[in-house]
Image (cartoon, rainbow, N blue to C red; front, side, top):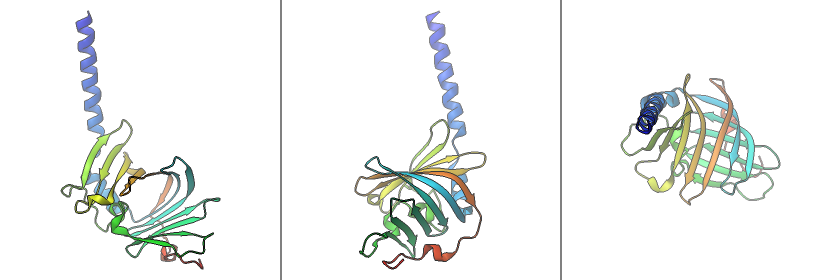
Length: 196
């Protein structure tokens, strides 16, 4: 009887594993989804490396543009545009911090042509029971960190990403309901300045 129970557990585990694998979205489908994604507006919750949380609205205009507007009391504004990432604080008299976009894992989502099948780009491709989880990095510059993205199916939709930066920090962004395919003004993505 014990042997039968063990066999049943093994068979059940095998069926569950096969089902989970079957639910994993192919890389080509995810690349196609990202390439078809032109504009996004969504509420988000951000879990910072120190465990604190922020909320706000994110705007994405592919290729190359992204804007994070944070709710008070966070006075930061993050804009990706013109191949750079700008981090500004409206309460500060300092000029915005600026980094090359290609040195952040967000460049993978914002690329003109996303091809997750590129050699050494995807370092993880799993199914967690509810979503396909892709971990990707710049194949030529893995030292810039990685991004872990979660996609649900039917229809394919980006739900979350985790940026693992070059300094060992981790930032999670969880997306709320997304509005896609609308028109977003290029002015939203103008680099911030002290006067903005």
